Amino acid sequence: MAAVSVHQFAQCITCHAWSPDHSMIAFCPNNNEVHIYKLLEGKWEKIHVLQKHDQIVSGVDWGAESNRIVTVSHDRNSYVWSQEATEWVPTLVILRLNRAALCVQWSPTENKFAVGSGAKTVCICYYEQENNWWVSKVIRKKHDSSVTSVAWHPNNILLATTSTDGKCRVFSTFIKGVDVKNSASASSDSKFGEQIMQLDLSFSWAFGMKWSPSGNMLAYVGHNSMIYFVDDVGPSPSAQSVAFRDLPLRDVLFISERMVIGVGFDCNPMVFTADRRGLWSFLRFLDEKITSSSAKSGAQLSGKFGKFYGQSKYGSNDTNETSRTHGRAHENCITNIVPLKEPGDTAVTRFSTSGLDGKVVIWELQLQDDLSEYL
Image 1 (cartoon, rainbow, N blue to C red):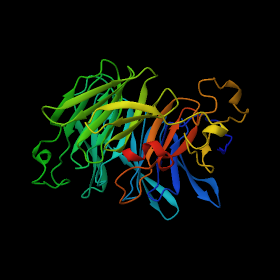
Image 2 (image 1 turned 90 degrees about the vertical axis):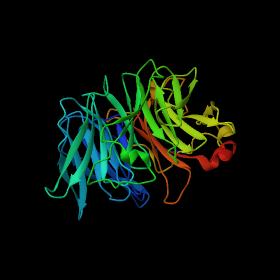
Image 3 (image 1 turned 90 degrees about the horizontal axis):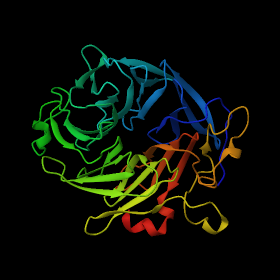
């Protein structure tokens, strides 16, 4: 369970994303840059630094089909980065925001991406061929506070959002000339920005959210140590709320239709599963204390990965570890969870997490025997 340390000034990772073949990783070391590392001869080497933003980069996503990187920042700007030869060339996106951009995600077909902001708006950005630039249409006057996360439905039309007003909403993002109408999908008949659903389940800030692989279910978390599972998304949804005793979550990921991983302030991924009746409950923490007796369970931390920025140039911070996190893969709040899914896979068996401790951790679920029935 070795971790590689790179001594830098930054001590945490704001967000991260993977290249299509998972051979490169892009992440923000809690500043205005995005660093790209590549595995070369068994070692992760920094090969690019994307420098265009003026303030902290709050979101990054790497398109699996287009190989384009999109970044957003507190400077209210967004850039789409395209690789030309050995360089990454940025293109400015017109967001028209007066507050920070907080999150970003490519749509499934990568002809659009969504940006959530502190301006209580969501920007749906698309490429305008005639003018050779990226423009945006804005969903306004729907949120009462900052938009903390966005998640695309597999149909490329519906977009779910969470906000610090405590609500989860689903919108239609159909754009004429960009999207194709699908007779089998009722959502393609909806107008741009039309609200399909609003959920008032959380009485606190609402954060990370994801759709299930089929798109039939939605999961999101609240700052009140609860996770919400929504079925039958539409005018009359059904929802389940699962409360837990531990610290709040910040992000979630559907592993399959019956398993969700939640990550957050406990520094330890939480496993939630559904039984045959569809009832969700907390199963266990994914990471066990790293001892010789528990080597078969818990996190499978990649030996070539780990602590990119866990130590400053002044030395290690290991002496400040608390007993709560000592011996675990993460030592501080986990803020980001990203699937490492291969083409054709129906379930996610590998994923990565990053957090305020500066670590990127790779998790292997196939080595967890008790979870195999949920994959």
